[in-house]
Image (cartoon, rainbow, N blue to C red; front, top):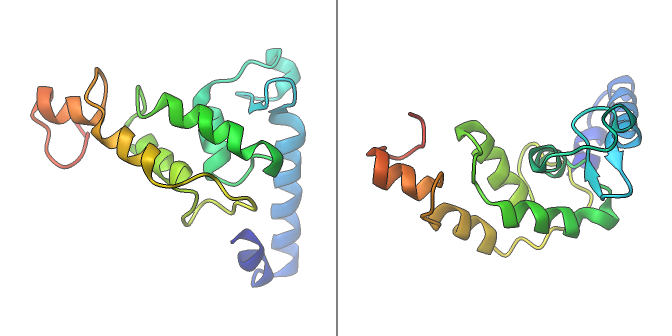
Length: 141
C-alpha cells in the first residue's frame, strides 16, 4: 500500500517520507528485543512498551522479518489499558491494513485477535465498559 501511495506522491515528499521511515527504524527499533523503543533506543537502554510496537505495526514501521512476532505480542495484550483512540489503531494493526498501515508485509490477520479483543469481558476491556459503566457503542466515557 505504501508503495502505491508513494508512487503518486511528488518525488521530494516521497523521498522525505522514506528517509523518515528509515530513520525511525534505525533509531527506535531494538534488535535485541524485536520491538520499538519509546524514543531513541540507546537513550532508554532499549526500554519499550507494547503501545510503541502497536503504533509501529499500525504505521508499517516493523521490519518485515519481525512483523509476525510483533503482531503476536500486541495481539496477546489485547485492548487492556488502551484508550478509545488507541483502540482504533490497535484494531488497524491487528487487521493488517487500513489507511495508515503502509505495511510491506502480511500479518496473520484472520480476525481472531480483533474478535477476542472486542468480546473479552475482563477488567478494563471494551465489554466491561459496556457492562459495568453503562456505556453505549464506544468506550468514550
